[in-house]
Image (cartoon, rainbow, N blue to C red; front, top):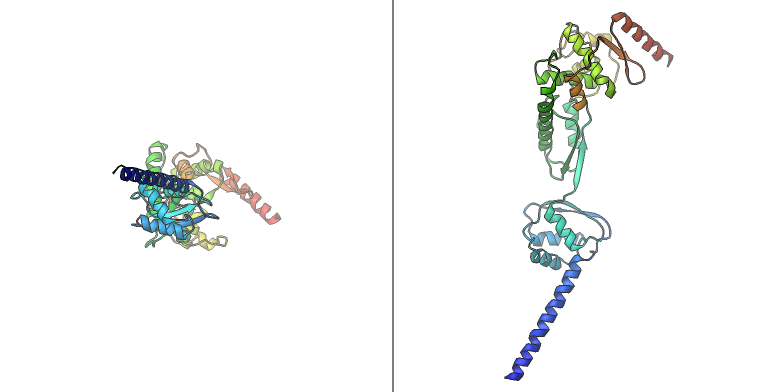
Length: 325
């Protein structure tokens, strides 16, 4: 009996030693660099369980042994915490770090940048070309309703959701800026403010000029003068759906269209583009100036004038400069 007890003790000890050795080996393998030779991405579908995830990682060469990966996930209590998405794994990533990445949901991030002054049709066109976005945009949102900036997203993010994000961002910005507006501003609604900002955005790309250009248009509105903004005529001709790649003609300036500010007083019916924050700030708090006119200076900026006589001189100088070039 004693001999049997000794044999069983030796056997149990052997199992313990073997188990401990296996655990140490497994832990070492789980924490050590994996076989991946270069960076790769793996997409984990929604609802994928541990065995599916382990299989995908093994097939992609991220891990060497799916059983080891699964065991590590179970022993660390993370088997049920795996998240769907597209993941990037660097060369030599260990099974442990790969697991941590999938559990944390650190998916591949993409970005789409919407420049200031684009029409909604142009924004939609950019979203349709953007990498990794899904779904359709069934209708083009109103101009002036989307905030231009850079938006980050993961693969599978829908285009419709992106439009919603842009609209929500614009709403938040107006909630912030509208209460800070000049109390004497000759606009009554946020939409009118965005309309004015969209004209400012299209008239100048020089940061220091935005508030001055806004001041010119505000002065003209107060005096009942037509805005006479070329970008509004271009919008009237294209509806914001394309770019007019030719100079405006006299016939264009006489176009019978509500967006033509050469033939109509006041602001056009709505925004002619999606203005950015700076243009909106300028429209809500324009420069205090007596300027009523401006013309291009040939170097990307503008020359401003208080009187029509001075403006005509500036126009003549600009045309002479253009003819000389």
